[in-house]
Length: 400
Image 1 (tube, rainbow, N blue to C red):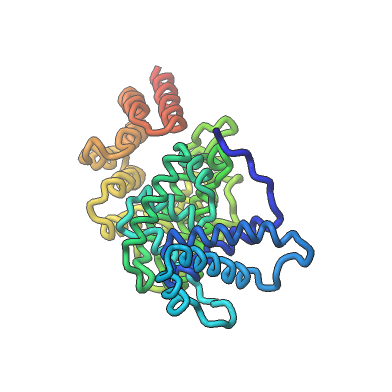
Image 2: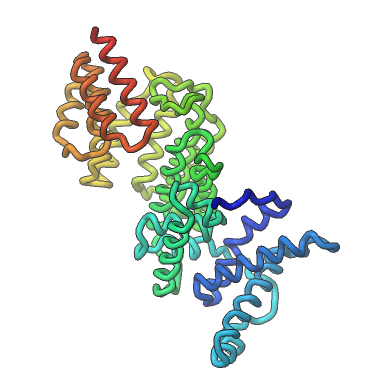
């Protein structure tokens, strides 16, 4: 049975923003991750109950939540045994004083995105603990049963509980998970997933938090720029019926110029740090596409130069090689691009779709139609399969 929709509470947005911050404080104080999250959830529920009472919310909502969550964490530990009671009172009780103002975003994200976790588990735990989504929301977003997602999150908590954390971990692991979250949401169309959970927007929100936590990290800024530059085109990527629209046929008046401007500014700041990384390069390629007023004005020469750089930074990545081959097809001609595509392993995702596109540009419509049909059979989503099937039919009709 699906859970009933929860009534919107006036404190929802505030509590959603504060929840991860409070969790970060408890974790930094030494609380075990799973127990800390349970304590924070209880504190949030108590806030919903009490902040509507006469007197309203406290003047320091975060401080109130930290105090209540820590008390609930201590009480839970006290109930375990007398020994735990003595240890907590002596060693864990924090000194009195103002609430910590340190930014624990990176620490919390590092725990949720630890390399010991599988990508799926890291994504689920990040959305649950840092994104503030309920287990049911995360499950619906990934189209799996709630019980399955609950087990996945529980296993992830047990895994990170066994890991030692003295300091925040590798930012690159966090960037990878945020990129995965964005891609999962970006493929869902302009309105996000059917349940209304917009994973692409959530990834951007978390990436903003990360950039604030590590303002000097060029790749973090590069990732946020990349997400914004792609997200700027989202309204034009699908029709009202949900069908995919390729980049060269999109209505560019629907692109979000404010998001593009923000992405370009972030990218320029990142590149100025002279610490080039793959996310910055991908953002530069996206910016060149967004800068073109029409498909014919796309600067493919610069795009190919950036793909050369990306191939150097991410050597051996077949997806990069495939995208570079398409760029070569625009700069040096479709036959040159096709030679590169055909040299890639058959199992590379979207290899046949790229070959079909280049065959069509080369005027070999019969082969293009055949490869579009092959690509449709291998498509992993209904929207992509429908799009490629229609491309095959269109090209067949043009071929006569």
